[in-house]
Length: 389
Image (cartoon, rainbow, N blue to C red):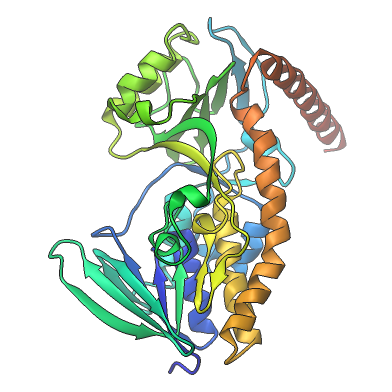
């Protein structure tokens, strides 16, 4: 039985489900609304960092998440002509993130939501009005256009980078989205690319454009194609495969680029979007609060998005539990605790973006030397471990 009140959580992604699970544990009655007509499955590669592992354990879902880190993966750096050299992998960075699919984390969270927390699909907020004691939200059913207004004691916007809750309460996207002048396309292939083994991963890095192949256990590899551009709007005037063929013209990498885009043509789902961070002075207004990409969007370059989403949901529930009956105080405490970490990772993402897709020739040269140093260090560590075995 709810003792704290009724909370509307907008968004059935990682941040939304994590928030609803922790709110329920803290004595709230959460209701999740999701714009899509059904729950998403599958998805692209995600790294789960130690903070994400800890948050998943706090939420009671860690054991339900399928981990796909493949041991002894051979990582290649491949140039435009197809020449290969040993390279670094995503898991070689500090924190040694675990490899999972986005859908793996969402499926794990779903085990604590399905049949336990009310979920309304095909539903999104139309209007949000606040008073000193609560929030009135007009919800719209997408398929019929029907609306109804309901009272809530708390509203959580966990509805992504282009958050409807943020727009309704805090202002237009342009006020908070900070473009990084880059595009991403992430998707899962049906099989490994020709020329790569089942335990091989690859990076094709050129100035302003790159491709990453992430190889995982018990599932086909996923791909990230990313490139720099100042003309973001033009990228959406043609189908993504056509745009990518034009962008990567002249970069074949021994046929890998063409084969990956061929796979994209057949992929049942993909993410093709511009890269933006969300920068806000505060994530809460009255009894409305933002969590995950809606609040701080670290970008895929950070690698911390899923971790931050789970951590945000768990922390919000913690602060509300620590401050019963004092919603605004709890939201301020939530903001104060997480802001230094999210600010740090937003800054790191700007640097990591140069590893993912160098912005110019100089950055590409510097990246090459950094990768060489990391690869050499990894080789020494493996030799040391083998000698001590």
